[in-house]
Length: 189
Image (cartoon, rainbow, N blue to C red):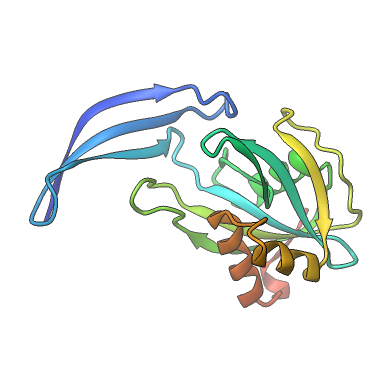
């Protein structure tokens, strides 16, 4: 059994997320397998993050292109963000509207996952959303460069070509593919 000691705690304002400060800690673990320090990242509000698999009436999926400073490039991803409430479907509806301009008419939680157990404590909840119109006008903070609605064929090709390659989007798409739409699990938006 390892024991962790908090070495330092520094809050970073996170320029892309001014309303959701991030806590970065250097933690020293002492145990049978490790004595090296590691970095741990978590939001200060302890709410789950969300990722949205949004479908329009033609069964196309919403994707957004955003600059990711860590990689130094723009990436195609599913709409997502930090949770601000204890209701992931509400956070998903808000993120979808901020990043695409589309409003969900129904939502279904697909399940939670940990995107990086070596670095983050936060869970991400995948949410399926249905929209009436495939709108492509982000209304949020200006973080989204472009919105597109991809067909299943376009989405599969983007994955094969490495165009859609972030782990959070891929995990959400897997949960979406494995989870049937159950009427009792749906929330009217």
